[in-house]
Image 1 (cartoon, rainbow, N blue to C red):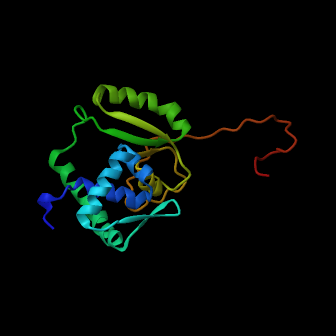
Image 2 (tube, rainbow, N blue to C red; image 1 turned 90 degrees about the vertical axis):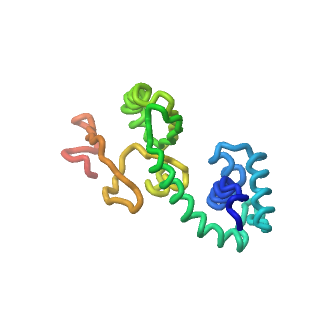
Length: 190
């Protein structure tokens, strides 16, 4: 196949549909309308001469051709992003990127005001989209929810493969109870 005549953007659509198995979720993750996404999918199907995904029980199931293609797309897209990112570098003062951040309510309350003020000065065109924290492990949150960062606490201190971790704040908790509380004598352990 001649890549000069192939719209590589269609591989982004393919990748998201393979991941979410839903046209609406895949379109939303790429900030496209369902109509635009469906149009792109139709072009890809025609170009590859395969339906690629078939609706089964309200979910898009990959065809055999799509399963084969997914192996290559999953490897190629991160490599392209890495190469393109290194070639141009990141200039925060001119970037218009939207960062998707999941944060606990405590993190939002305590730190996001300061963080957003910092961004306003250093990176005035950057947008920040805050999503609620999830009980999923960090790696799964980053992969499944299309996030750039997860802010909050992590009880599991062991590093996860493919995830950079930074302890940027530590805190402690205090518990106050009445001295004569009927269930607490000299210890909080019951």
